[in-house]
Length: 99
Image 1 (cartoon, rainbow, N blue to C red):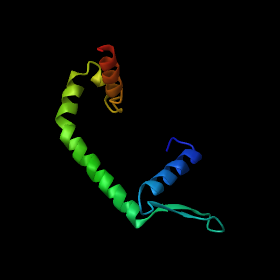
Image 2: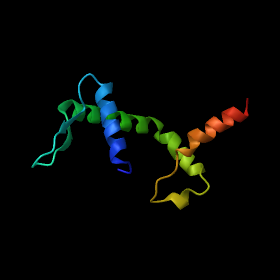
Image 3: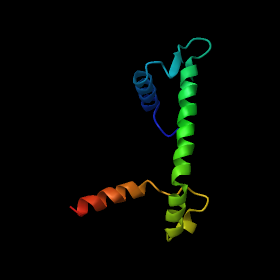
Image 4: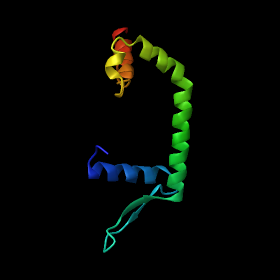
């Protein structure tokens, strides 16, 4: 997942504290090895999040396509993840410099 074991457990703990019902249930070790799994509520949260993700993408698909078409080196990213995360940072820097 690209994060430390500690970071993952801190995020699990934060999720469980965020909601009134636990999202992840832990199982203590032993001969079976222990671990963690989503609770039924956790599965519901994931389904709802995925629905939000799809709707958000659909809502901005036209704008993302326009940005992709205007990207000078878009062909460089074919088959790769386009670094759209740069845009919000650029917008913040631009707003700061305009003050």
